[in-house]
Length: 317
Image 1 (spheres, rainbow, N blue to C red):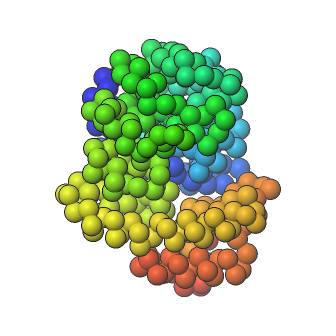
Image 2: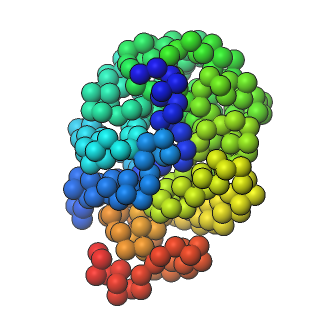
Image 3: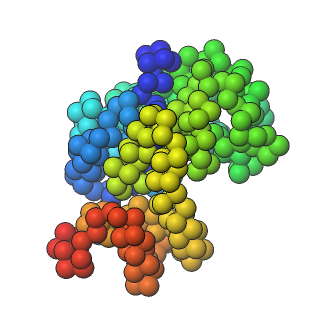
């Protein structure tokens, strides 16, 4: 598949969807299939959104080696060709990244998010060789995850410019490194889809970007699909108001919770409140306590999202 075709798929709100676990913290593949069908039925289809499997927000970096490909296979099969399904590769060296990218391609993913190989202590030339080798090895799309908060995780705009001829580099998940402005990559907006990872989807779209990372898409798809439609229609003020009505509040809550126990409450906690319990994060992270759950419940109700009463939620679980 050429880059233009891949760019039409890797756009819109991109959901790092949660991984459901049973009571023994084993992946619940049946539930993942049911969730995929719900996401597709809710409108998260190819060209409008991306279902990203096994990202960090979906506990992908904590999955067993055999669980990740099985999870990708489950989502691809359950989507029945209607969704753009991506997987993720977390900070692996070139040899293993190429192997995982080929495996994702064989399983039917349309693309792969690939984080820099930070444990190899790469310089900018190493980053270039890494992604060139991956692009040359596959036919699906690559979304490069720029991670400047990690040592050796920053890729600079000039390095991305040198990737312009790498046919399967289709998108950049963009956060600017220290010393660079957000705008510094947008001379490449016609080469790569620039995907916002700074909680600035409206700014991104106005500048020619083509998507944003959004955890809430997997929780309540209608919210982010509406934001995307508003931006595509040029109704930026409405899109910003809708985004601001939810995301800053959830992020502020999550930041406080994360200080206590290794996770932010996140998608799983919200989904449980909304009558779609999908298990807890794997230990040692702890679930929300009673006070935190009540606070989150009030937030979600305030968004206008459907939250059953306690009796209904217990029955759904």
